[in-house]
Length: 352
Image 1 (cartoon, rainbow, N blue to C red):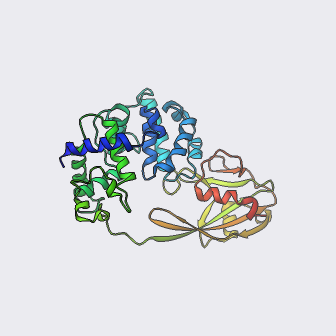
Image 2: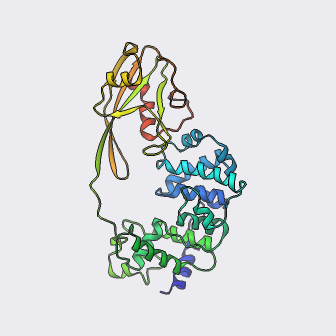
Image 3: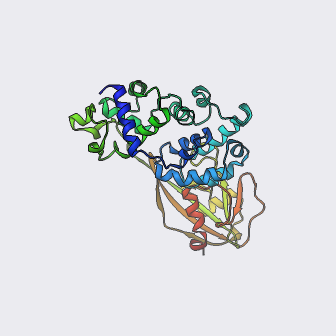
């Protein structure tokens, strides 16, 4: 099947079966498409939709987002994961406001200069928001093209990526850029799935080399997996007599960068050692209770979380507002990771 035939058949299929009710499709402004594309990085559509709707309701345009406090942005992002995306959205919005007068750039080069925007994301914005031909290569498209052409080699390698980008370029039609971009993503998400692909429903299976040889799940090829590592951290959850919980801001880079969390230390740290290090008088301690540890999975490793709840007779001396806060577990506006939110929500139960 020629490249032009591939696009025609795919678009004909999308005209009947494609997704048209996604919230960022209802008003395809560059801002809304950008937010959606950043959220869709490493995350499925079903997870993205409610977060997207809340996000654009709170930050309806790039100027509102740029002027918002980062804590407000991270609070709205809490539980979504990959928090660097939220920080990049906030930073990029500031750049658009300062350097582009609040008007979103419309070229791939300008878009790729923004934090968190790579080649494929920039192309998706150009195609979907401006209707200009711009081939994309997200995870779904990589899978479709790798199977269609039986591309050999780990999809993460530079040589494989060059080949896939060339194929993406060859298949992108000269018109209907927005529809084609959505169509090829929809095909990968709903038909050419990673596991148990629905080849019988595929509109472009004619000419698909992986389908012809009966081994579609072999593609795209992955690099050998490294053994998952396991880490342990002890989280000290301090609770004052009114039930407020102490949290500290994490460093801007690294795990949960910029978010707030109960202090965590090496799993060998003792309560006395932590209190001494933190400048908290041991005489203020009313009760110490260790809760059951639980495991939290990240992309490449697992974290064993060991909570220690420390109820205090009174709140210690004033703390640095830029580094630590006392928060009401049920009423705060800070960004918490899923682990931190779980620990804070349990203060009323586990610390009593």
